[in-house]
Length: 147
Image (tube, rainbow, N blue to C red):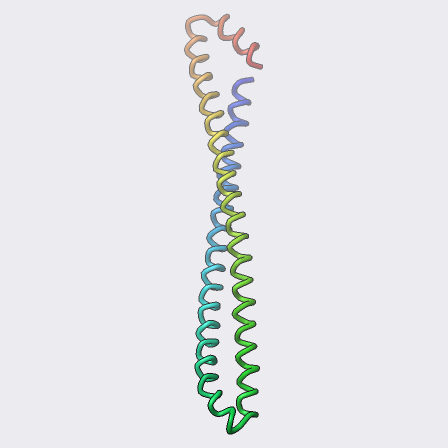
């Protein structure tokens, strides 16, 4: 019957709205991760830059004491690889986030279609209620036509 079709449409809209809220929450968690990765990356870059500045000073010292400079070189290369690793992780998070936003956008479209369908059913139902009062046979034939 029309009523059960309408109630199915309503529960589909409710379900989709719930899924959309879950996606929004996941997305916010994702953005927080991304923001945290940004801070971590920024700190690692600062550390690397400080080491590079120290290294500039050590190049002069290298001529007098080679051992001192080589330990600093390995520290710098570790800092550089940490920055590269963090940049890679950040890119992965950005890609995941874009995929997330696409899911959210698709859920939005699905929800919008379901709402339109529900509204059309409600309008049809309103029309049938009015017809039933003026011509009960017309409305019942419409009911059987719809079911």
